[in-house]
Length: 281
Image 1 (spheres, helix red, strand yellow):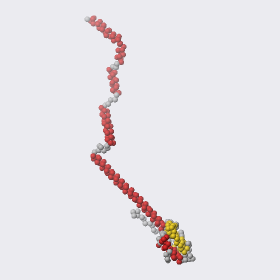
Image 2 (image 1 turned 180 degrees about the vertical axis):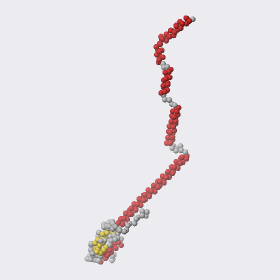
Image 3 (image 1 turned 135 degrees about the horizontal axis):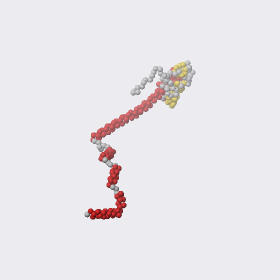
Image 4 (image 1 turned 90 degrees about the horizontal axis):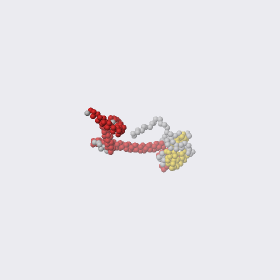
């Protein structure tokens, strides 16, 4: 039995190996090297998992919350732009309405106050202009009457020529009184301006007016109504009658324009001072 078993085994082994060796032992060896082994495939999968990003549960929750927050912001901005008062409660709407009404009333009161101030300013400017105009007119009148300003206007010219005897100061004073009574406004005798303090005085050289000796012919320039002044001078027993009775001659001529160029420099006062003006009056 033992001897029969050995040849059988020896005969079977060459038959089992010869076909693999004869048919392609070299190709089988190459194929075995080309196929990856199980351990190699596992190593590659491990490397791929390590290299690829892995999202944890925390990261997923954070990403979801960020998305929800962004969506809420977009919705809120859109709602605010389109309907800013839609999401407010009734009491909030009432408060906003009250604030708006109160602010509108305040602005209306401010506008009314500004209009009143504008009216006062315009009225004040008009009053100031009117007062300034009146003040200038009064200053001009006072300047003319006081002799500080020259003047021009209709009136008369009187020429007095002495005779053999010089005229006395009383004759010149009579002429001046008649002119004042007839409404003469401005009077100039030769180069001297007549003012309230003017006076005619008899001197050794002749009649002097405010320190200036008059020389014949004496010319009077008078501004006033010629229709009133001429009859007043020519009344019987009046000023011109006294001139003629003293041996002198006198001529009165009406003129459309009489120029009074002489001015009177008022002396500085020693005791009198202007009364202060109260701005409120």
